[in-house]
Structure formats: C-alpha cells, structure tokens
Image (cartoon, rainbow, N blue to C red; front, top):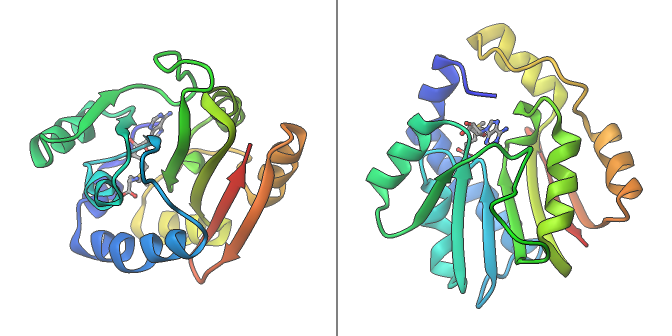
Length: 190
Ligand SMILES: C[S@@+](CC[C@H](N)C(=O)[O-])C[C@H]1O[C@@H](n2cnc3c(N)ncnc32)[C@H](O)[C@@H]1O
C-alpha cells in the first residue's frame, strides 16, 4: 500500500537515514548479511537510501523495487547509478525462479495487505540456501505512530506470531531473530 503523506515525509528524513545506517545495517551485518558477488533484491526500497548502504557490500547485481512511483522517482534521481523498478511485491513476476541469493526488506511487509503472497514470491525467487533479511516494526510501535503521527498503516493481520507460523509453513528457517526496542529483525534461509 502507498504511504500516507506524513509517513512518506518521515521516510525521507535524516533520523530515518541515521537509523538505517547506524542501527539496522550494523545489526544485519552482525546477523550475517554478506552481499559479495550475490544477486540481491530489495523490496520496498523507498527513495533509495538502502541501495546506497547495500551496494558498497559489492553485490553481483542489485535491484530495488517499490510500489510507489514517487519513491522510485526519488531513488532514481538520488542514486542514478543503481537500478530501481516500480512493482507490487505481491507479484514479483519480473524475477525468475531461484534467481536471487539475497532478498532484503527494511520495514515493508506491514504495509502489504496480502503479505503472505510476498513471502510466497520471495520463496520462489530465492535460490536454495538463499537468505531473506527482514526488519519490521513491532505491532505496538505501529499503533504508536498511527496514534501520535497519523501514519495510517493498513489494517492487516501482520505480526510476529503469524509471520513465524507462515515462515514455518513455507519451510523457511529462521537463522537469527533479534528483538530491538522498535524493530524485530530476522535472518531467514530458504
Ligand atoms: C515504511 S516504508 C520503508 C521504506 C524504506 N525501505 C526505508 O526503510 O526507509 C515502506 C515502503 O514499502 C513500500 N511498499 C508498500 N507496499 C508495497 C508493495 N505492495 N510492494 C512494494 N513496495 C511496497 C512503500 O511504498 C514504502 O516505500
């Protein structure tokens, strides 16, 4: 789902960038993120700051995709050296079966009405043994932002219990799961 105006603005802010750079990226690195010579897909790439942080890890290929043309336009303007596409993560049909070594998500599944379809698609595009690095806010924090800042998240059943159950159903293995004050971070393997 497209972001509300307040959340869109917040995603372009300096605090968001600082969090992604100095907290989320180091956490993912600690949890095993290694992109050297890997084919990488970032889902919900927003305005491209993730691409800027991920590409120094020397992937073989990188593509970022997002459902919002406003975000992808910004990403292309900010980082013309990287590849971005406008696409709904419920259908990753543009990518072949078992074509990616790593899929990475910085806070997106909780925006997707049918997030299970996105997990299905990630299963399809990941190579056997490939990794999903996933970071999502906790339910209580989503409610906080909606109450105080009117971010207007979609009303979905997304949460860690249902997510973990669905990962198990799809035979995906949680290698590491880290609770932090605002986020839950996963390293998951196919
Ligand atoms: C909370 S923002 C995070 C943006 C960026 N990853 C970051 O960490 O700053 C969620 C992003 O997911 C995108 N998004 C929401 N639903 C989507 C979908 N169905 N398919 C692809 N992207 C989606 C939004 O447009 C937005 O850019």
